[in-house]
Length: 425
Ligand code: 4AD
Ligand code: MG
Image (cartoon, rainbow, N blue to C red; front, top):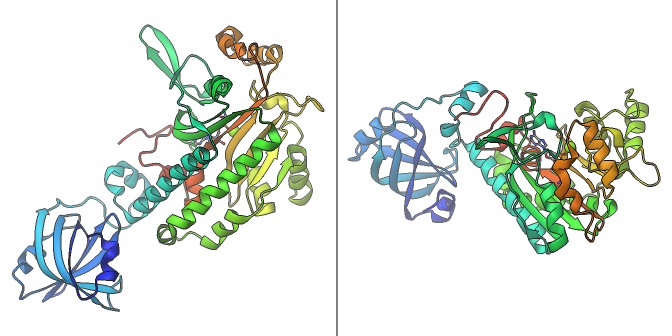
């Protein structure tokens, strides 16, 4: 039986398979708190019981199969106490290296064990809901799942964060984004999405960057900026709604402000232009950011704080944007692109744009970035045969999980985080 069924079993004998999470001992009684993937439950063993000696020997994280009769008991941390009627030790654990109050770095070193903590268990469950929600969102709307190659011959998001891989006697890169390949797919499937590992050699050790993360991307033929930003807002609201529906218990365990999430789940999110964002931070928040500068975390945080909900910022300066983000016709200095910025300091969670159809302009911009446009021949082909407007965006899965869970660092949003200084275990 799963531990979360204990409250329904008062007066009955139950059997639970699990691990010893906590143990308290007095002279004539032992309290064993068991955990399984669903929760914790307190068992008691009295000195007159035949397995009292076994219970004395048991250590933290030992695996056991316990039988007992459930009673309500206000003194128990869970409100229930199970009087043990049978106990089978599956394995006595060696001295568990994780004790109270250990450093974050140590917990990362023993991540393979720390995954069992109630905190990590809760986060992994919420992550699973987020991932499931993304699939459901797109499939329900007729998007086709389309998988990209992970080995790619060229960059999508700037050469400085590429991971090089020896590829027989040649050199390739790990994918920075699925986007360029998705652009090929929309001419066949029109609406596609995907969620897959993404790699960036980020030289920063921030609480928001991983070198291996999961990006959930979408791409749609015929779609323009105003439409694609609305899809992004709907997706984020849907993710939060699903987490609220399925993970109340986990959110509570993490101490997350559920009221705030409920607010995000049903609010409208504003769309503002980059130049309006500058006005807000410069005029209302005493900053001095000049037109043409990319927004830093600090500035993004102020913008989202100003509205108290996620904000879509569009029309960033073309000059500082990737080669595929097209200049607007009205004002070519502004690109038809957007970021979604999450509140509470979580900042950019989505990046997207319309896709440029101007081959000459893209060639020029690639050259300026030190790229050989010849490597993009196939991509430019897409503009030659039945080209249509199209748009897409990418959601940083871990950024969303970190925000929804209210985590201090993105590292806890993924089971085995990789960053500049860590690739083990
Ligand atoms: O803004 P980015 O770089 O956009 C793209 O890669 C586009 N090609 C996506 C598209 O249009 N299909 O990345 C998208 C999102 C960011 O907003 C951020 O949430 C996340 O991916 N992201 C990272 N997450 C964790 N660690 C990193 N190093 C990240 N880099 C980007
Ligand atoms: Mg971005």
